[in-house]
Image (tube, rainbow, N blue to C red):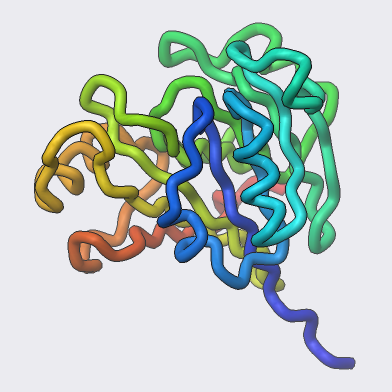
Length: 207
């Protein structure tokens, strides 16, 4: 039997009405796009839909014009993927977020809200926050993500975007990223400005 090819998913959140043209390059060739809320303007979804099919949820700043549910679960490449904007608040998993995970038991949960890149396992569920693709806020890096769903596992990647508010050097952007991302070993051998690859295998001893 022919082996099923890997599926590439573009992951984005917290655009707040901004569609960065660089997203077209980073998401070129993806099979699907997930937007984890705080869309800001329906035009963002329309432009993403020109790249690939989009599944999106609304965030706390979105109103009815975005036309997206607050949470959703879909299946891609045999994985249950949950989307919910607010999963963490103040660095902690929220009560509603925990209830959502307990109820849906997804293989992957994509979320936003914190503007902080995150990748970690919670039991059997991979939690993934791509960071914010909107205008830069505070000292947090801007970014999007890629999830590669392969036969041997899920490969999450964070991709840094250029700073759209201040003149941040590539070295400063990398330092900001490394100071914010949590939950997995980053491959520090990649050059600044390239994709940061993080390969997570499900912890051994857990089934």
